Each structure stands twice: as C-alpha cells, then as structure tokens.
Image 1: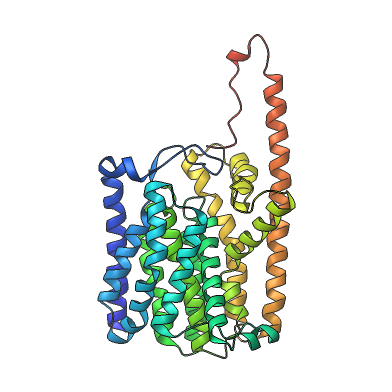
Image 2 (image 1 turned 30 degrees about the vertical axis):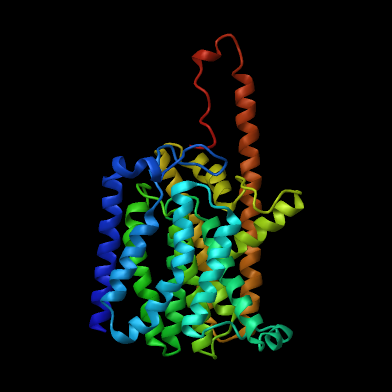
Length: 380
C-alpha cells in the first residue's frame, strides 16, 4: 500500500512538472505544438500547446517503474499496448495530417496488442446472442478492439474545453476504482486511482486557465486506458455487470452515438466536424450568456462542470448498482434521457441567443454604427 501511494505521488509530480515545463518552453517547440485559434470547434483565444499527453505518458511510465511487482504486471502491458494510440495521436498533434480513420485504427491495434499481452477480452455483454458469438476467439478479439477504439475516439470527441476530457476520464476511473474495490480487486482499484493521480497533474495546468491542452495524443491515451480498464474490470470480476463500465464511460459514449446519428440525420458525413456538440452549445447558451463578465478562458472552463454533471450521474449509478443488470439498464436509459433533455435545452437556448445577436447586429447597421460596440462574438 505504501508503494502504491509513493508511485501515485511521484507520478502526479512528474506529470505536473512536465506540464509546467512544456508551458514554460513553448517558444522553443511552439512552431510544431501550438493549437490554432481558428476553426469550427475552436473556442480559445490564444495559441496553446496541445501536447499535454506527453506529460501524462511520462508520469505514467515513472509511476509504473515505481510500483510494486504485482502492480507492474498489471500496468506495464497497458502502457506498451497504448503506444500505437498515443503515438498516432501525437503525430496528429504535431503534423495535423493523420486522418481520423488512421487514429481509430491505431486505437484498435492497441486493443489487439493488449489482448495479446494479457489474454483479456470481452466475453460477456449481457446480450445473449452476442455473448454466444463472442465464444469464438477471433470475433471476441475484434469486438474488443472495436469497443476500445470507439471509447478512445469518444474521449477525443469531447476534448473541447479546459478540463473537460481529463475531468470526465477522472470521473470514469474513480467509478471503476470504487467498483473494483467493492469486488475485492484491490490491484485493479489501485491502478485506476494511480492513473487518476497522474492525470490530475496535467489537469491542474489545463483547468481552469488552459495553459496546456490534452491534444489527440493525450485524449487517445486516456481513452484507451479508461476503456481497457473497463474490459479488465468485467473480465476479472464476473459478478460485475457489463453495463456498469458502460455507465462509468457513459458521457463520451452518449456524445459519440448522438453525434453520429445527428450528422446522418442531417445528411452530413459522421466524421465532419461541427460546433453542435453538447459542450459547444453549453458555451453559447450558458457560459457565453450568463458569465460574460469573466475572461474568455474562465468562460471556456466553466463549460466543463456542466458536462461533468452529465458524466457523474451515470458513474454514480454504475457504482451503486454494479452487479444489478436490471437497474443498470434502467440507469442507462435514464442517463441517456437526461443527456438528450439537457442537449435539447441548450440547443434551444443557443438558437435563441443567435437570433438575438443577429437582431442586435441588424439594428446596429446605421450611419453611426462605428460608434456602437458590436455584441460579443459567440466564439472566443
């Protein structure tokens, strides 16, 4: 136990120190690492390094090296298998030329690699016909890789505001840790909390002022770890319902499923970026309207707590009813209904605000328009 606390503390310090160093040395690497401020999904107003995943990976490596032998046996294969997802994400952060398909494939390769190293895979989903089919090893491995890649990509999709993705992952990891601890799986619980500690080191630099961004490398790394720990939880503890880890990861999964359905409904490509994600609408409808007196970074940061609430509700249900399939199915439906209701509210409010801004701009067109300050843009 003492070794675990030391590893967590050192991992946290390494992650925090590396994050601060990356911020302090921006003038040296900024040519390659700064995130642009223009784009349909861009809300920040100052160029910011987007390689926070590097700090997290270094913290994880050091924490693994300082862990006990039992912990290393559980942790080291995850870090090795995570390399394809992390490296392809970092390549996108540095070059902006790696396609979504290539990054998704890399995370699936990470999933296959982790199966090869640990022999862990999804063998139960709670859906009887699918569970029977998963008895065939190749299908089980492929399904596991697809699920892991999907969750990793989902975490990347919600990475839009200061602290949003890393905070959501911390919520999910805490839920998985509590479930594992409740099952008596102390090693898995400690691993979940250790990764939380390392992520928190980056989080302190990212939230609330956004001095360093997670980037695709960090998002895919954390998404992969969250999804694989979910697979391990059910594989190592048959009493845990497969729906429990799904609820622990519910918010990014809901966001991804709804985004794909929404874009298909609007006859757009599912991979085409837009500014209609839940977090984008919260920025326009809530923080952009009611917190205008605050600076742009603080307004952006205030989006995350609203989204964290949407993530925390299903995570709490997952911990409370970890072995109850019926309650978890109901909790999944109720949590998705909550997500949809909140999305409808902020979408309606965002449209209303856009109309008000357009009317204000139309009234300002006059011979003295240059003397009248324009309304604040919706994106900052």
